[in-house]
Image 1: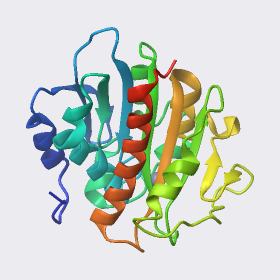
Image 2: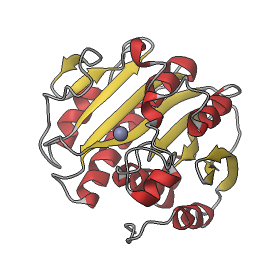
Image 3: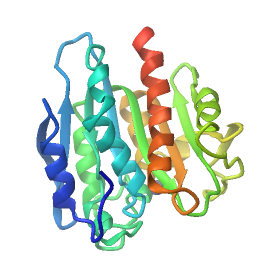
Length: 251
Ligand SMILES: [Zn+2]
């Protein structure tokens, strides 16, 4: 169910709380709202731990929808092997205002080390006691003409080339993304590394280097494609990752 204008974070929380078997709780503070998280799956030790986040930038709704629609839909088919910990909307005030920044003008994805950014503080606190096999942080790019992504894995076992090939069935690839000059490290068509220099700034880099074995950041073109096409691209990435680790343990 796509969001209707005006966007309300309360609707996100209602959808989270309506997911069968999910445990929802307040993780900490965000600007003007609590930040809600959701756990789906048992605490059994043999489950691989997956962290899913969206909406770090409030004007990137396909990431929020990708996480929610996965948990509302086909996520249940993966519960024999995975436990999901999700923060579908990291930036509630930005989501409601449809702005990249939070409600006090801060870019969370450039502020991971900043104690004055409440969303960064909440995310860092969450990671103090958690480790994840797999971490996907879903983003969008309003300047992009197609899909691209960032990825890092501790043994350099990357899935990005396969993901890019799969997304080609959904829409074009944008291989020339360079909005973070000097930080992007090209690997192959539409695939960039997660640069350790980004760790004190970007949530995906921080989360990967602090607490995850495998990190992926898919980016969909928010002005070039309709919402459900962008969600489909994010889901294609997620399916490839989960299907891969369904056969082979992450660590
Ligand atoms: Zn973003």
